[in-house]
Amino acid sequence: MTAFAGHAAIAGTQATPDDAADAAEQVAQEVENEIRRIDPTTGGQSLVIDPSLPAPYGADIEATEAPELSVSQLRELPPAPVAAPIAAVPAVDVATPTFTAPTIAPPRGPAARMIAEPIVQEAPAFDASDPFVVKSILPIEGTIRYGEWYWDESRAPKTGKLVMTVDLDARVISVFRDGHEIGTAVALLGTQKHPTPVGTFPILTKEKDNISEKYNNAPMPWTLRLTWDGIAIHGSPVLNGYASHGCIGVPDPFAEKLFEIAKRGDRVVITRGSLIGIGDKISG
Image (tube, one colour):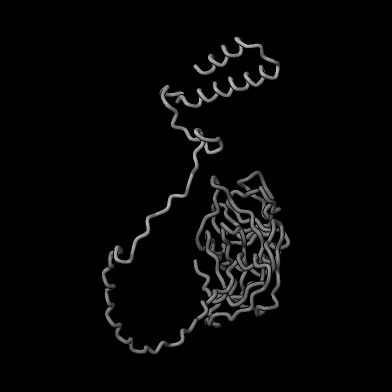
C-alpha cells in the first residue's frame, strides 16, 4: 500500500525531524484516504459523498436544471366545459320571525324556598272559590332547616277550609286555609322499617297531652291522629339524623298553632315527590 512505500523512503535517507513530521502527516493522510475509499459494508469502492470534503470525497453539487420546453411542445388543454345558465330565482316574501317566550311555571312548594332572588311573574288563572286550589305561598327565602318553622295568616281569610300537605321527599309540611299557605315546617318522618304512609287522611281525634302507649310512653303533645294504628301529627324535637316510627313530627310551637285551628275531619294529604304551586289543586 502507499503508506508502506512512504515508510521505506523515510528509512533509506537521512531525514531531519521536520521531514519526519511531514512524512508522518502524509502517511496518516494516505491511510485516511484509503479508508474513505472503502465501503465498510461491502469492502468495495465507497459510494458516500461528503460535500464538506475536497474531491474526490466531496462533490461539486450543482443545481439540476429542468429542460426548457418550447411553446410548441406544450400539450394543448381541452376547453373548459361551459356551465349551464342559472335560471333566475323568483323573489320570496320572508316574514319576519316572531319569538314567543316560553311560559315559566310559578315556583312550586319547597322548590320556591330555594330561590335566592324573588322572581316577579303573573300567577295563572284559577278558581278563587275552590278552597283546595293554591292561591298564595308564604314568601320564604332560602331553604328551611331542621327545627325551623314559619306561620303567617295575614294573606288568608279568618275562616275557611283547612287542608295540610306533607311531602316525604321534601320532608316539609304545609298548612293551607282556603288555598292560602299559612304555615310550613320541616317534618320528622318515618323510616323504611316504620314508613310514613302515603294517601289522604282525615283527622280522627285531637289529643293535647298524648302519651304513646305503643312506644315506651313517649310524649306526643298536640296530637292530631290520622290512623287508628298510631300514625299522627304531633309535637317533637326535629333534628337532622333522627326519624319517627311513621308519625309526622313537627316543632312543638308549630304543633300547638296547628292544633288550635284544626278540626276533626280536616284532610291531610301525604305525597312523595309531589310539589304544588299557585293555581294547582290540592288533591290526594
